[in-house]
Length: 418
Ligand code: AMP
Ligand code: MG
Image (cartoon, rainbow, N blue to C red; front, top):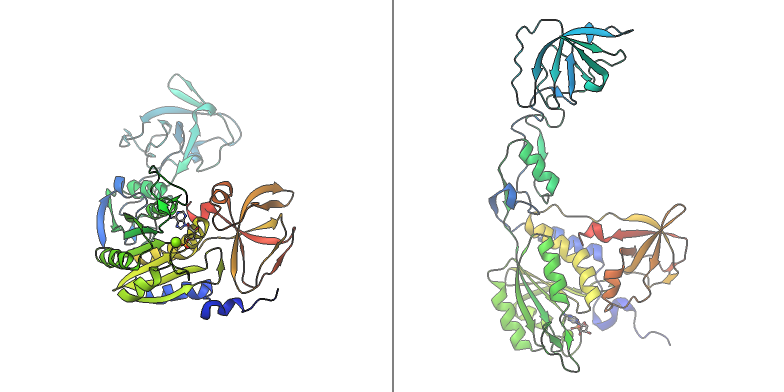
């Protein structure tokens, strides 16, 4: 049967391409989160508010990389064993204390201990033998071996962490290594989260025929919390315009972002868009994507609003590709552009032109890398496809006919922080 209307103009409005929607965010959305100082132990996952410079070099002094003997390379016989008097001992944490720094000899030294002045090389203890007051040293070492230089990790004054990055465990370790005990971070974005739908029930409650348990709020709260947001979980709203309007109006104050799922499409029971329009504005509400076409960007007063679709897979995909960049911008985080990796398609797939599409897939090694296998059930409501898959094959707007063996872009869930 012929289609009655071109997809782009169905329901009387054009579909917004994802890149245009992202460009609207870039143009209109700026950081709202403020700056606070937290201790390193509280900084994991937080967004750094300022560039951080090292107030000290790491390591702060030249030191030994092994347990052994510090020597002057020039005193070693290149062709045979060298015997040097044992002239001192330095352990990690000791200040070097040689009776006569000019004296010929070998200094017992341990990993991390400060190199004595004038000594340039450390022999591993396995290559030396103590013989009374002398140390016998095998030939063959290179000048400078096993010596670590002051500042070879971090130079004093260098920028070690930059504004907008989400702090990872290794970032906290690096900050600690230059002696910082706390960091300036962005305040947590205050997000309000609702599900909408008369059919929805709270998990744990009775669910009669016709009811489904609310899955989206739990997935979304997790996604928001992974991004460091503070989540006000405001429960389930019925499909009732007045109730939705009242609840959204209340959530618009005291939050930096209001997020809903469901009720944003064109059905008679979809009241979310009209409610937002009555409280502010809708900028667009349909994206040229699959899954997840109904995605609304709007504002309640001056507070940004995102209405995600109801279908649970569409919710997660649109969150990751659209809501996340919005949240990054509001939070003062560097906008995360997910990296796509080329893999072989292990499936045939036809799609419409002019829309971005994501196929849930698992990866399997093949002789030239990885093959992506399409999860059998791709419906926008098949949430088990998200738990079974390892990521999404992202198909661009102009692709229509994907054949097994073609190279396609794979977006691992690890790139999306899930
Ligand atoms: P809607 O966009 O409100 O028409 O919802 C589309 C589909 O998603 C319907 O089958 C809803 O029952 C389902 N749905 C909406 N919200 C949720 C939710 N929070 N949890 C699980 N399924 C939902
Ligand atoms: Mg609904």
